[in-house]
Image (cartoon, rainbow, N blue to C red; front, side, top):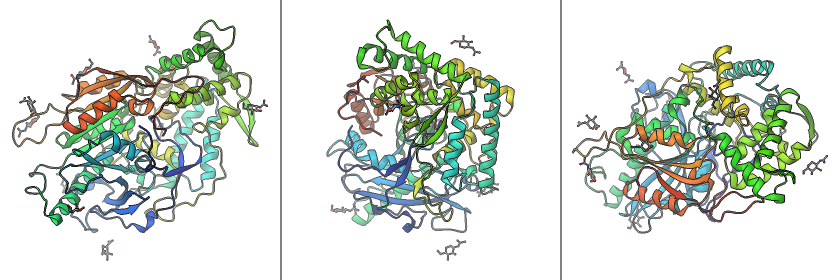
Length: 604
Ligand SMILES: *[C@@H]1O[C@H](CO)[C@@H](O)[C@H](O)[C@H]1NC(C)=O
Ligand SMILES: *[C@@H]1O[C@H](CO)[C@@H](O)[C@H](O)[C@H]1NC(C)=O
Ligand SMILES: *[C@@H]1O[C@H](CO)[C@@H](O)[C@H](O)[C@H]1NC(C)=O
Ligand SMILES: *[C@@H]1O[C@H](CO)[C@@H](O)[C@H](O)[C@H]1NC(C)=O
Ligand SMILES: *[C@@H]1O[C@H](CO)[C@@H](O)[C@H](O)[C@H]1NC(C)=O
Ligand SMILES: *[C@@H]1O[C@H](CO)[C@@H](O)[C@H](O)[C@H]1NC(C)=O
Ligand SMILES: *[C@@H]1O[C@H](CO)[C@@H](O)[C@H](O)[C@H]1NC(C)=O
Ligand SMILES: *[C@@H]1O[C@H](CO)[C@@H](O)[C@H](O)[C@H]1NC(C)=O
């Protein structure tokens, strides 16, 4: 899957920020919107009105009720601005199918979600839609629209879920947080616990009251929005077919309600699972790749992410050891990869007790174990791209040079002086997506509001020791997520926390509650969304099947290239059939040190 000439980068990276709060990331960077399209020129509408944008895409702002609970989940009458109260405007970027909707080969929209939970679907569409379309289209037979949308609070969707007026303040807070004492120390744990309380207050001050955007960013809300996108898209197709005199029967679909076709990565698996569980009769096709456990997530238990993290790290050390002198992190006296592991563990243990300082680009930083843990955590998402830079950064760190750690684009803010215009009104799409960390907290902390396990210090303590026990290397970085929810003040108005699952496909006539089987993908070794979660998800959705790709990294389709996996995905979208549960696909590339390119792998 390679980006073709028609795909382009939507958000050009200006600030190099990754939030540890973005648990299940695929899209992490703070990005500057491509200014070739003026989003403020689009008036949000309750019907779907597309506008040409970014050369070969179509853009829209879909008006939906801010609060689906106020309408009991039903759509207010179209073109009515008096019912349904305040609204949100969902930003969509669609790569249209290569045939018109009147063509029998037109196969409808596929919605995509990049994870995060605050990843930008519009950004992903601009970057990967043409590649995804090439993957799923069957020439002359099936041609899809690829639809990226920004979930509530995210990127170009309004209102924005942001807690800072100035990006300088945000960066300063991020850098300060990275320099706190380690959570393995009592003082560090207390400090992070208190900072978690503080961030909730900060967001409440910036977004006070009933109408606070943070009450309306739940996963259930986004699932309902997806249903709205499906219905409004269908309506558009029916209208076009009527105009062209090609409408099939009544309503273009024989009266059956239109169904979602969906490809979700990482946290996008929770979004998909939520949709399938809330609206089981409305799933047409659903591919979930890189599976997070929805119950574990909704209950803020955090015991189902890092199961394979140390195995993933061992793969990195082994790759380095096997590289011999080609890996800077290996020393001539090493007799196995365990020697490399020992050096890194020692470095982490040292920094946990004795942080050091480093000067980088004219700024002074505290170098903590958190920073090293985070550098390793973020690198393990895409091993092919990151093993070599990680080996160099860790080798330098062992010799006391932290420049590469501090300049890792996924770890730290570099340009804190970025001049960002804050959006003028809550309904104006921002020029730059800088609030991804806050919206991630809004989604994660809000989804688990009712059962958060960290509201009091003793339970936060036991949660942290459980996470550290699961992964000594990246556990510390991971603890920042639940510890940011200690005092989250926003209870979502519209939520769904289970039970998760969908019934068996049912052929009885007129029964629309049955679901199409889900296709579930995972790599063999994923440090953030382990394979076990894929099997557990499958057990909840009758007829579903897991495909295991023999690769390491986060999400099968994003971490390597496998014609076998691609073929299964294409056939599933075409016919709705899944292969045998547990089917294994070989991958065409492996991570290597020094770096070895993987032809066809999309870099996102
Ligand atoms: C939502 O449902 C409740 C209970 O069934 C009902 O009282 C209320 O009027 C409904 N609200 C709307 C906007 O339909
Ligand atoms: C509703 O829409 C009409 C026509 O677009 C406009 O004149 C009116 O001000 C709107 N009302 C509200 C409450 O926004
Ligand atoms: C209508 O049909 C014509 C001829 O087949 C085609 O070129 C056009 O794109 C169609 N329009 C829509 C909206 O499907
Ligand atoms: C630290 O490492 C970087 C990157 O390898 C290098 O450019 C720099 O000169 C080093 N700094 C010192 C003080 O050795
Ligand atoms: C730590 O993990 C081990 C297995 O890896 C387990 O046996 C032990 O009970 C765990 N301890 C805690 C405190 O969770
Ligand atoms: C349902 O329909 C599918 C395809 O039409 C068929 O393969 C399957 O056997 C049917 N299942 C039942 C229970 O009738
Ligand atoms: C449709 O199928 C579902 C799941 O098998 C079942 O729970 C429901 O009762 C069925 N509805 C009708 C009207 O047969
Ligand atoms: C697929 O296999 C896994 C692991 O054996 C199992 O837990 C799951 O229930 C299976 N899925 C279905 C739909 O039977």
